[in-house]
Image 1 (cartoon, rainbow, N blue to C red):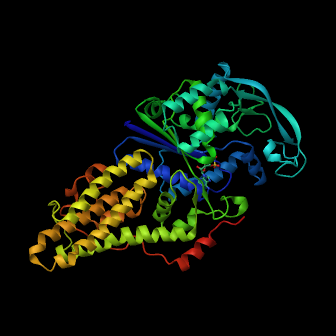
Image 2 (image 1 turned 90 degrees about the vertical axis):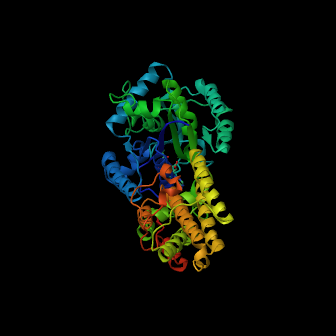
Image 3 (image 1 turned 90 degrees about the horizontal axis):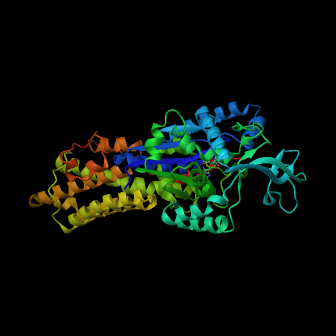
Length: 528
Ligand code: MSP
């Protein structure tokens, strides 16, 4: 296992408010980063915004602002959203920052000098009215501009291209040597069959038809076309190519750093084909893994502003607390597959997993320790009954499985294990019937063991939930009577809960009434 950890989200376009789909990528990445920190691994977590390009330029104009003013304003909202969601990023890179632009120019110059980049012509269908190029698919059979519906005509403009095909064999070799590089596996096959096997086309890396971008130093009529600009954020943010490359050396260059990009399946191609090829051309190491998660949809369609079916995470967090939204995002969708946001499922998930299973276990257990042992957790004595033994081994097993799964980025499975442990502990109460043990003075030791085990299991579950439940976890550990921050290390010793003085239980997650809450969530859907 590598000793350091670098993880990134996509950098988002600040063209509009972000929605719950963007929050999904960011929350999952945040949970991985928090997990690694909990495991004591030096971790660096990067997010940011991809601020150049024609679309941003046009949207700014429509809003009567300069592109810079426009993105500055949108970024305030994005940072505010991440702060409300308790996203623990170490850095937020904006591609309009000088630290990024300068290095993009350097990279472009180097690739040009090496003849990986060359000048040619970009050909496409042009709409004079919109001043935009379109592809065959975009104009369809009618050959009209998808935006204004006017006729388009074939046109060519000077553009720089990157020689992709030169690196295709090396890329496929890298895939073969690193079978986990692209996950899920199905996306890898899609990439090879759809893009690499038919022959990689050279990629257009500059444009002259708009000006909002990083200028090509050697030929300032051109701006660097978005993907070369955008992808390099992952290293410019670390100081690559600058006078302060320490973070780059620690979290990228060093082979002991595990480098992971979390992206949505819509941008897999750019991350598993273009990005590694750019890095090869620059003579730099490649990321260890690109995990392409699926997209969150609404019942019958992709979430999109133009369809008016976008879920805004803010009102949900205001009403139900940030942790419920974080939990739903991590737990509901199988990581790697597409998901569906539904208000009913949101309520159901919170009620079942958090209010009933986890919340109830905490409540019942604290009440019993208060009643039978004046709120003081009995010391560890080891299992007595078969039930004690079963819960104890499951707890140990869960600690191990959880870490193995999280290290493999199998986050859904990792949290399913924690849920199972909580469910098992609830069943253990029914099996051991502490209220009967309490009636018989000869069963005192058994009762002590049961109470200790329940508290310890809660402690473990609470620690493993901590990367997700960032605000309630303080209240949770307070109820368990401890203020020291748990870690994966301290958690492995059952004695950690010996003698804790518990507080009065207060429900962490009140049960939600679907008849009231479903219509509320529906009313928050952002209309056009
Ligand atoms: N700027 C590029 C990415 C450059 S990365 C070097 C971009 N930006 S974006 O704002 O369109 O964000 C795309 C990412 O947001 C997706 O890859 C995905 O991670 C996330 N999502 C956007 N909509 C989503 C859903 N409906 N569901 C899940 N994730 C979604 O592309």
